[in-house]
Amino acid sequence: MKFESLEEPLQPVASFKVVDNNLIFAIINNFSSQMMGQQGAYQLRQAIKQCTNVITFDIQLSKNWIKAEGASHLGKGLSKCLQIINLKLDLDSNNIGVNGISLLFDGIKHCSSLQNLSLALECNYIGSKGLQNLGIAIRQCQNILILSLSLYDNSITSEGVNYLVESIIKCQNLQNLHLSFVYNNIGNKGASTLILGLSQLINLSHLNLSLGSTWIFTDVDSELGLAFKQYKNLFKLVLSLDSNKIENREICNLAEGLAQCQNLQHIILDLSRNDLKEEWLNNFGTRLKNNLNIKILDLILVSYLKGKNKFQLLSNLRKMKRLVKLYYKI
Image (tube, rainbow, N blue to C red):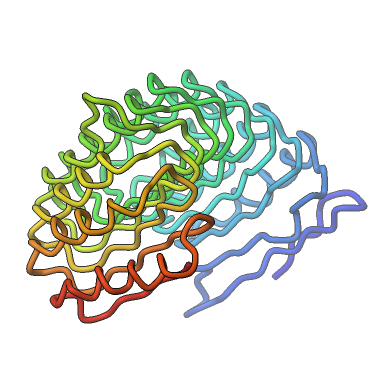
């Protein structure tokens, strides 16, 4: 089945999988970088709203400049698809802004069966106010189990993080969460609020936090690392802290916090391009090895370990005999 109602030069194609004469899967993926604009978004809305039996929708609309009005059209189209369980939207670089978030979710909130939501919202001028609107919208998705939000470069501060966390913790069924705040100015306060707040999600087993280049630095009162001790059921943690100003003390706090996550078995930790020194290695390993359940450590370090320091790192981490696998990239 194809949608070919849009004017040239777009000619978008929607791909479908049909089972027992019911449409259950839709991919609309020929729109990226087409500059379809608001008129194109309206025509897409007319096509989407016909997909009333779709349960999985994957829509790629990056770099189309649909703005807030286009986001409204998209939301209205999706509001007719009440059977959706899995929804993936790539709206990277569309200038939807603060109001666009609300208008988009005015439609999505009607998808009461939604369990898996992935939103790519990079470079959309959302800001902290937009994140507040996003949070208000997400708290209406009470059945959601898996949530992925990419918020790269949106001028978000710690205030915006607070808004979002207050709403996400209302979704107590969440099991898998991926949040990316890369290139936002959330700082220590935002990072601590995020990590401590999310610990209230008692069913969370998989957590992926991308906090690279977010102006996190070590200070005397930082609780960033220690906050992880509040997580009771976390099984896998992917944590990217690259390109900040984190120093030895905070890394030791992080290891101490992770050591108290008693169900944690798999850690992927990116500490590249921070102000770490050689002496942190022993302290990190000593603290982390106190967690008897950790099976896999994937430690990523780039740009400042050379020569004998590589071997020192491996030697110290291999002393953590309970890590049955060690992955590293240096």
